[in-house]
Amino acid sequence: MTKQYTSEQFWKLYEKLPQELKDAVFSEETGDNIYEICQKNGIEEDLDEIVEYVGQVLVGVLPPEDFSEALEKDLGLKKEVAKKVTQELNRFVFYPVRPALEELYKIETTPPPKVEEGESSFAKATEDKEEKTPPRKDTYREPIE
View (cartoon, one colour):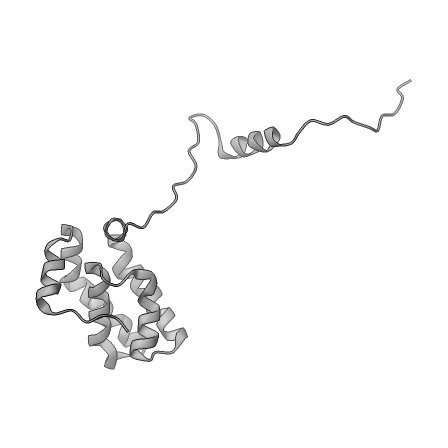
């Protein structure tokens, strides 16, 4: 079960947020997206709790990767419904503020490998592969006449 926060604790956390997340917490668009997702999945009765959990993710107390599990355990949603709701919320609510969430939760994503200018990634991959394969003597030779 997720921890319940008082309004004082919530406001203290809110004050420390980057502006992008502050805007997202009380955004009309965020509220509309949550409502539409709940309506689409037939869980309007859980709207208030889902809004609260989304708010917890946005202020930094509920990691996004634990969101689906919280919906299952705390609200009693079926696993498939919780997964679908989480995917849609990720897409419409969390993804637009992803850089700020990554900074808030200190989530590190691995950057793609750098490719030198004028060199394709395929050329680089084949070059790396060739370097790793040790040269060996060709044991099969036909005589040439």
